[in-house]
Image (tube, rainbow, N blue to C red):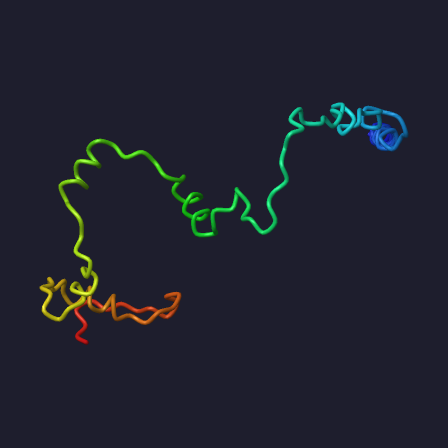
Length: 138
């Protein structure tokens, strides 16, 4: 038993020391990943008749920050379908002062209830201190 334990310890120690050797599977030369693809040379564009921009003229790419934002969000102007054109044609044009008359006191509204009123009257914030009560009177 003692010889087996000694032999097992010697074999384990020699295996561990062999793993510290300089050559082996993990220390081989590998190709450089940045040198695999050859860099293409710079090419001069074939159109030499480009005109420089006018002094102070807006750049043709800039359409204003508002237009760039709308294009980024909605993909720019899209063609309307026939159904959409027909619906807009039937709706007609809006009255010029429609926004003023909507906020008028004599405009009829529908009461949505106390829950909606409480939601609209809630203070702004991240909702960390928000509380809810069922059947609580305010």
